[in-house]
Image 1: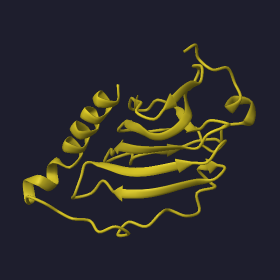
Image 2: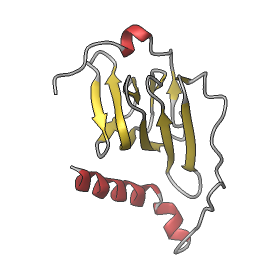
Image 3: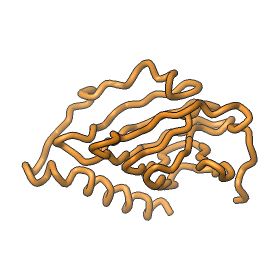
Image 4: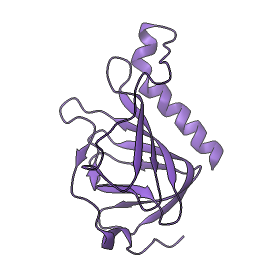
Length: 162
């Protein structure tokens, strides 16, 4: 499973950066060039760190960020007009599509959120979780539509059978 996730990550990164490679062989983005986001409490509950790796622009057709959630932290409900793939790199977390049971995800898992599917994701109650998010960009609608917060009742809802 981990090998498959790495292969898919490489393929996704290759597609995400295709426009950049048409222009030049390499581009180096120094560490710290894209500082962490602040003021996240309007989009997340709990302690979350979002470090953008690169944004959808002339460099790439997708944005890529490393997102770390401390135990119990999570996104609001949201959707992505261009879809999203995230690869869990450490810890244990949850993800849920609207109307579905909560899914448990762990290091090495790859999650594909199709275009416009209302969902949330975050850490489990007991463990932090970090993922690399590859988010598609739609020229008309951007990359994310933020919706209402996930309630404690929703977060503590039933888990899907493993």
